[in-house]
Image (tube, rainbow, N blue to C red):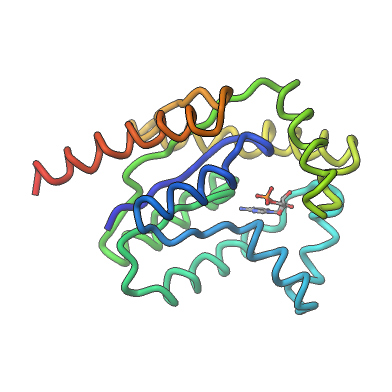
Amino acid sequence: MFNIILFGPPGSGKGTQSEKLISKYGLKHLSTGDILRSEIAGQTPLGQAAKSYMDKGQLVPDEVVIEMISSSLDNNPGAYGFLFDGFPRTTAQAEALDKLLSQKKTEIAVVLALQVSQQELVERLLNRGLTSGRSDDVDESVIGARIAEYEKKTAAVAEYYRKYEKVVFIKGEGSIDEIFDLLCKEIDRLISAQQVSH
Ligand code: AMP
């Protein structure tokens, strides 16, 4: 299997790049944000519980998202690999993911970390709010809270994977295609290295 984490702050382009990457590499896209929004749309108890956190720009509790990812892994036994988008967002989630993957005799191949300046993030999110239908993209104070959560809890996830030398930083500013090309170069390099070692 070949598993990737696409990492970065809110507005760094994870969703956009994920769509392109999954279609090029045949990976299964696991976005905890998308799963949570579909739970909210379906008015499930999980969605209702998560909504109050999401509306404030806060992270949903670890147990909730870990359980969601655990079932998604179980529900896709034949996948060639997974692209994790918006997960893990805390060190506890990263540890849980490593455990879940090792139970399936696999691991994270690489963490591709998109780097975008804070000013550009806020501009992109406000812009996205005009069309995304996401209430958490409209209010500047909620956007600020999401970026603050990222700095307080999520940035540490890159440190966690750096210990295992799995993080590659990618310049997340430029055109969508330029950024996509940078991501693909890294992935192609890793896939050929994996083929050589097998
Ligand atoms: P996203 O679509 O990735 O920007 O996520 C939107 C919101 O969903 C976040 O602001 C959080 O409230 C929640 N969320 C998504 N993924 C996670 C996660 N891995 N851990 C905790 N909360 C999450």
